[in-house]
View 1 (cartoon, one colour):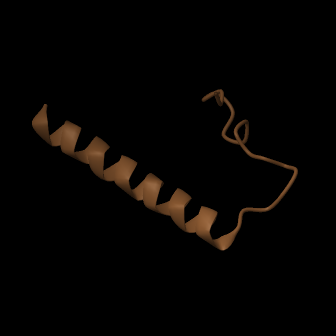
View 2: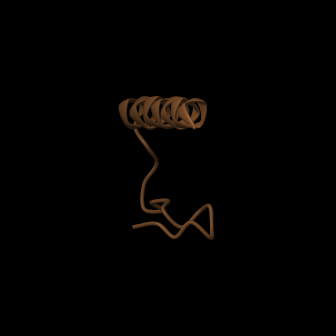
Length: 43
């Protein structure tokens, strides 16, 4: 699990992301931001 105190702790240095992995990661980040915004609206 990455440590949230350092932004680069979860990076894999052994290889670059493939195009599919990069797309999946971006979609996940967008979904996480959208979910966080929805939680803030509910408060």
